[in-house]
Image (tube, rainbow, N blue to C red; front, side):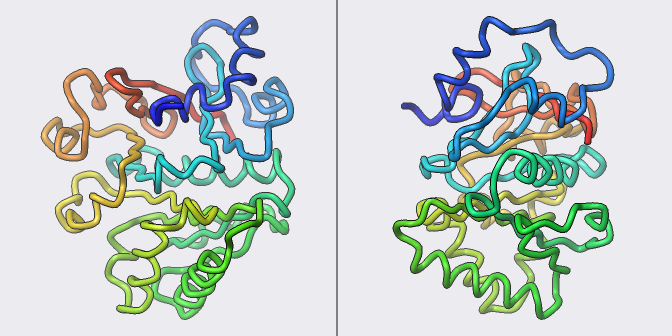
Length: 258
C-alpha cells in the first residue's frame, strides 16, 4: 500500500467500517478523546491514533509498516506540538496494553507531563540534559538493536529536536540511529520542531520523510519545511488543527480534547 495511505486510510477495514458513520465536519471545540475512541471502537494492535479528520474518520499510523519513518511535528510556538504528543500518549493508554505499546518522553519541561497517568505504558518522562535521558536513549537503542521478532512497539516522544540535537556525542549517536533504524525495529521517534528555528537543525531534517504541521505563520518557513501554497498552514487553528501531506493533497485533522 502506498506510503501516503498509511495515515487517513492505513487500516482499510477500519476506515470502511466507519465510512457509513461519517459525520459533519468538526465545528468549535473538538469532542473528548475518550468519546472519540469509544466511537471508533477497538483498534488493531498496529494502529496508532493521531487525530480525527473533519469527517470524523480516524487518522491512524500503522506501526507495523516502517516505511513512513520517524515523524516530525513542526509548528510555531503555541501551535500545539506538545498537545499533539500528549494526545498520542493518552490514546495509547486508552487503546492498547502496555505489552503492545509503551512510550517515553524527552522534554525540556517535564512538569507539562505531570498530569499524565502513571501506567505501565509510560517508560518515563525524561528532562533534556539529565543523566536519565542519556540512559534512556542508550537503553532504547540497545533494545532496538536486538528487537527482531517482538510485536511490542515503543514510542520515543521528543519535545524539541533542537535540544536533543545538542546533547552529548553518545546520546546524539543513539538518537540518530533510532531515527534511521528505529521504525523497522518497532521504535517510533515522534519529534517536535519549533518551525521558525529549523535553521538550527537543518542537517537533521533529511531524517524525516513524514512531517505533520501545526500552524506556521511564515510562508517561507512553511515552504522550507515541506509546505506549499495548497497547505495554507497559516490558517490552521493553533493547538487543535494539524495537517499532513497525502500524495498531492493535504489532510487536515483535529486533536480531540484531553
